[in-house]
Length: 107
Image (cartoon, rainbow, N blue to C red):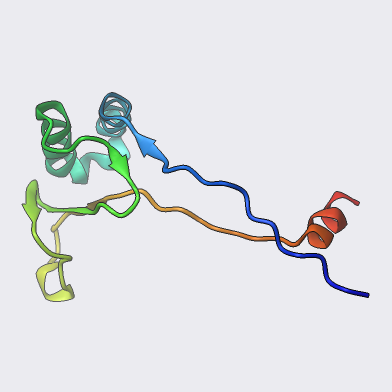
């Protein structure tokens, strides 16, 4: 018995527009659980409102540390007690199934 070929669905870039991202960040800001990230969240809101960031999409990473934009991924030596690090990016999870696997999941 031959294995059916793997079929991939077409993909399109997933983008979160600035207004939606600002709304998400404001919700985070209102949540007591995120207060340790307040400086980073406020800086991101400012960056989206001024157009410095044009939307959240895969492949673009914005690192912040205590409300300051970093031009690099922070190393462990930069993280001290009380430091708030934020990575604003969009992650994707990719998965493939062959037709037989998809059919077996339907049972």
